[in-house]
Amino acid sequence: MLRKLSLHPDRLFSPNENIRAIARRLFALVRDLPIISPHGHTDPAWFASNEPFANPAALFVEPDHYVYRMLCSQGIAPEQLGIRDIRGRRNEVDPREVWRLFAANFHLFRGTPSQIWLNWVFAEVFGLDIRLGRETADMYYDTIDAALRTDAFRPRALFERYNIEVIATTESPLDPLDHHRKIRDSGWKGRVITTYRPDPVVDPEFEGFRENITAFGALTGEDTQSWTGYLSAHRKSRAFFAAMGATATDHGHPTAGTANLSAAESEAVFHRVVSAPAGAGDAELFRAQMLTEMAKMSLDDGMVMQIHPGSLRNHNRQIFERFGRDKGADIPMRTDYVHSLKPLLDVVGTAPGLSIILFTLDESACSRELAPLAGHYPCLKLGPPWWFHDSPEGMRRFRQMTTETAGFYNTVGFNDDTRAFLSIPARHDVARRMDCNWLAELVADHRIEEDEAAELAVDLTYNLAKKAYRL
Image (cartoon, rainbow, N blue to C red; front, side, top):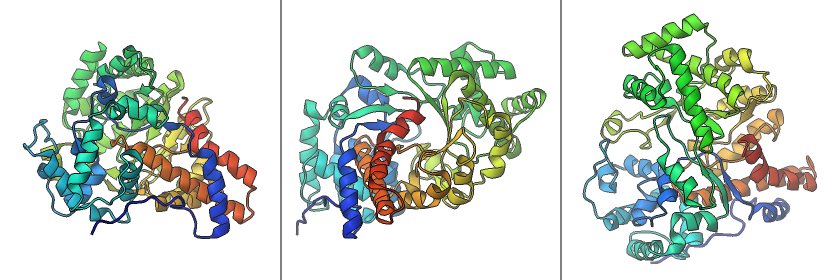
């Protein structure tokens, strides 16, 4: 039996009539505001070439590790989904068969944020009004595939259709940013900027680290076998990224550890990690010192610093060895911030102009550590819930655990942090609804007035992200 797909206008709002009415009024103020997407992983090649997306599987399945991690949990191998291996090769699979496999297993996403995002896209972007499943797989495929062949569904047209003001992608210092240069030189008015993600040349446990250091030197013209030359290479690379539009850096370290070593100690640990495979202690110490060095550089060039710790990345060794990074096997860990950040904060914690955005996958740290830190240090702001907590429940818990201590204005609004392009407007719809509902609860409890909630709704949707990321 075919079942109707519909998006309830009051989805994610409270069943309490009074709260729901306030949430509706607040949401009406922010529903159509431009989208600020200051941190994500969409492919800049999409916007550089503006070629049509190849097929529904290429649009919805291949770039979305939320999708294939769930399918993998049920024994569906990446090869069956057409995922490229670490050498860029993939099985010759029919994209329609990939889509049928996805559709037959769409029930796995019930109750997850992925279901909310995907159903929004199916209904709002492609006008589908029947639910996805085994019986409707081909109808979905044909409808979406036909739309993708039209100019209205090319990447730039969709960017404009959903009122995206800016998207920031994420590249390493080894990326020549050719796609960003092509976008800049094309004359297109859409704003797609890059973000400086130096992990491949900062993390001694990153695969190919020592080769990356050599390539970094060749790219920048600096002697990256010396400590001073290595730091100069970062300064030069950051300046290049800034010239290409970057306003922020991003650091995906396993921990939030920072260090305050002397120049001689820094040089010594640098030489140890670039001359031989690093032990775990030296790798952590070097990453820790480099967060402090990156903060110092941010004082010089004004780049906003983002720290994304607490994920044991690529936990599934077999998947990592065969398919590489970012295939849905990142697992959260307990994370300390109070002790870990103190060396960095001792150096630059009160320096005017520094902005550091902290993220967590350890929700227990939100009220105990992060909110008090951000509620004191002027350089610290709290990033929104991400990865496993980018969900209605995660957003509610975040507001409950941080607002009393850090307030709203020590947070930075919302960022979608996605590789799946069309999930961007879907995710912002969820965030706007959840924030409006939370504000409505505060109004209904007589903790704030509705005019204050109205200002906050606009700030949380638009102003805070734009200000925090210096956009």
